[in-house]
Length: 324
Image (tube, rainbow, N blue to C red; front, side):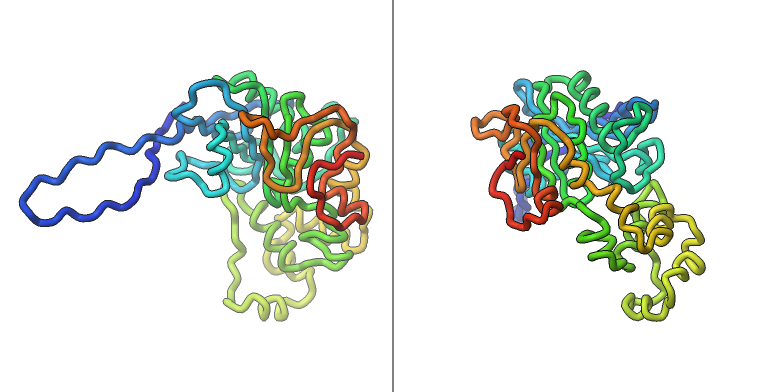
């Protein structure tokens, strides 16, 4: 297990004047994090690649800020603090990023699906993988305080929201942002049933062509609009290029007019039927940490998130946690 340290980025220093004097030595900048990588086991024996970033100045137990993604995890500590984490790290968190099953070093098959069947005790999915991972983290990450917050944007928001179907007791708050909701009606793959050909095709290729990288389809021409015009029928994408090699694309073209297939995977329709008391917010939350203004569970019933509000037809933007 490798442990790496990295110094915080400092401002550029000027070149010493040519006076013959010896240049003054510059003290090393203070490191920000240690980075450790683990392969976390889940219930079916698959191991998930997980990067753990611990503040080097940690003086006591800290909560965990957890993100699950198909896009890759850090291979070295941040050279400087990412802008979107600056406020979080002022409060103090252990940062953990995990590749979803089947992506990069994570074992198993990446299905690019939000399907969850909690009635099958042997089934694995993003909900069960998150539960098992959180259980491992709070038991094995040194000096954590037993509280976990999750956040993510787009697909990472989806994996965050799916934890609501069966949240681990240690999961105290989530922030699901720009999460896919209903891929048949109003999301990336379709708009009111109309196929978004370029987005659907290119994203499926990016995530399923090669498990070890994010693959961008190699168009023969610069003008991709003209490329799609010249392509002809949608079937030519498989006939000429993919040859049935991308499972998610195959599932979409095999169900061109079947909303039942797509809505069976709808995140919001499952969340409407789930119970629980987990805090959720529309924008960046104050996760359970040092400040008093935290979003926490109060046992009030099922959470109604922003994606669920869309599913119900309520298109106003919620200002705070809403409960059924």
